[in-house]
Length: 469
Image 1 (cartoon, rainbow, N blue to C red):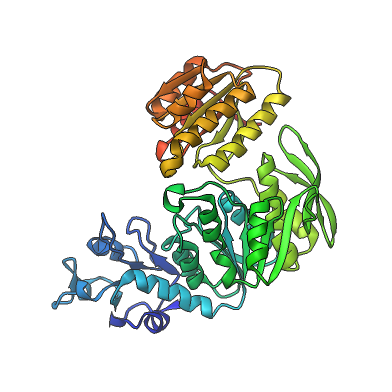
Image 2: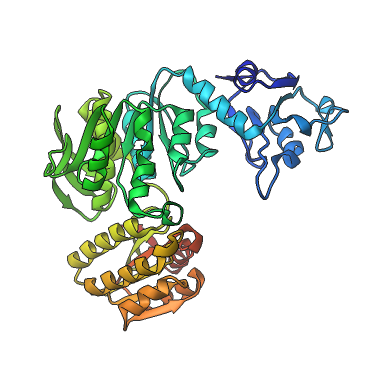
């Protein structure tokens, strides 16, 4: 769907050279761009994509650049386009970032399928993947890759829209007020999924109320919202601000949710529950651990039900999904039960992971419990008290040992008391864990992305054979 004509119409740009007429999508990384892509040269604080046009054109079919990047002799960054071995397309625009947004918005206006925006404090990526898995049993789905959910990653995803696609499932992240509104102005979602409201990026928001206000920016753009009925703070905000269709999901139907789970049970390898909808009930054997992943599954199931997906296809979509890399996974490494949740952390997601650790501790009578926790970043003035809360909770859970990584988690160690060890880095934490952990122990590893807590997990893998629990 991405042609020279579309790009020019969307951006108001001009074609300095017209080679290949159509592309599979836009790329911004010259290292990974493919032959069928068009490379867009973004200029950021630390790097200027215009400096990599030569490398990009060695691989791809064309480039989109700022007008002032093309020299009078027809060269860009010292490369004469006319001298390229194969015909290349060069499109000139006033501003490449605005051009990216304009192209994505242009393609969206010509798309007649479903567009789902996934927002919320925690669980967005897993919910997005589950939703795509459910819808994918019935139609072709385009989804944002990984956690590329910002003003660059999301429009890059839309640029890869192909004919025959039935739905786009777009994760929308936010670090400050206005982010969700900006993404919605590009993607124009018709349905929103709101997973929950929690303590995220408080450095940029300042309060839980402002977090909610920012996530609820999506409401003015959609006609239908799928929302967590068990999050009363979220539900109150939605009901006060939204006049469209509200579809709720929850656990055990206690909150009167439209879609709910009952009969929850856990086996060594699966989470079992009955999915209940207005169109019937069906047993689910999910490969995802934890109560929080039941909520993510319910959100995806509610989306499927709203779009008319048969319940057996919803079941197939939920049960076939195996999880997202670096998100909560339970693994057996040399007889040690490792809870691998190293992707990111905020107070809400940390609380969820600790609750799951507590459940596994209660079910196991074998060994000790060890929490290896890195700093939760971007909390601003809330940081110290949030980490103290973690220490108090660990103590109340009767966790045997805390390995605290970073200057903020030191405050958790102080509250935890005897049994806490403070280290400066994840590498040191890995070395400490290798010394103290033994067969039968339960170990939770978690922290903000900047703490690189995956190094603890990687070290553990090297120390023993990995088997999924």
